[in-house]
Amino acid sequence: MKNLKMKSARAALDLSQAELAKLVGVSRQTINAIEKGDYNPTIKLCIMICQVLGKTLDELFWEEEV
Amino acid sequence: MKMNERLIVVGLFLLIYCILFALGLAFRKKIYGEMEYDERQERVRGVAYKRGFSVLLFEIIVNAAAKEMLGVDWATPVAEMLIFMLIAITVVSGTCIFQDAYFAPFAKGKNIVLVSALVGAINLFAGIKKFLNHLSFDEFHRFSNIQLVLGVGLIIVPVMAVVHEIVEERGGGE
Image (cartoon, rainbow over the protein chains, first blue to last red):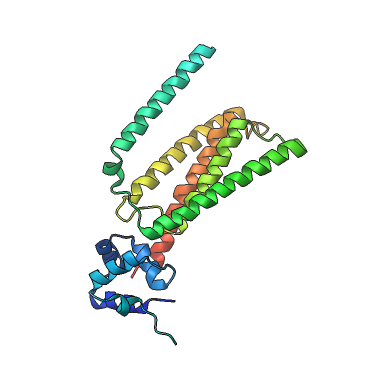
């Protein structure tokens, strides 16, 4: 499932995937894979992304049950 | 060439290889930059090594069965070993390349592609030259023609990397 919350949080800060990747210390393709829902990041990476984007884990990675 | 002379040549080659290997290790960070991979890349590389290992095992088993049961002797042992390793390495490289796990986040990827392309091209050139001199298809898989086989194999890896980069660029990051 696509992570649109992360994508919009990144866009709100006017960051490209490459810029976010550099700030977090991973490859651009990894950020792309997370946003596309192709890769489930570890909690460590989730926390780093949240810190850079100024969001909580719930705000970016919690899936609401339908 | 006498046995002693051969041993000296092999020893010299090993010495040169060891020196180059040591230099490569010493200047690795300067040449390639930081080579730490992120968690997704490490996971993909794990899958790639597993595939490469499985392919290598499969090749060895099929080759052994073909030799023992059917009596097929298609290449010299050294040529067989090198070709099997080449196929396994190509599988590992291909898996890493197509899942974006071949360059560390801050590594200079172009250098790696250039080095493998250069080594491949040298082998291919030497192999073609040798092959044209002999012009013998019967001996194609013998050790004397291994450079041609290795050259073709080594060129595949940078070609895969370049093709993947082009496809990536067209898809584009956001």
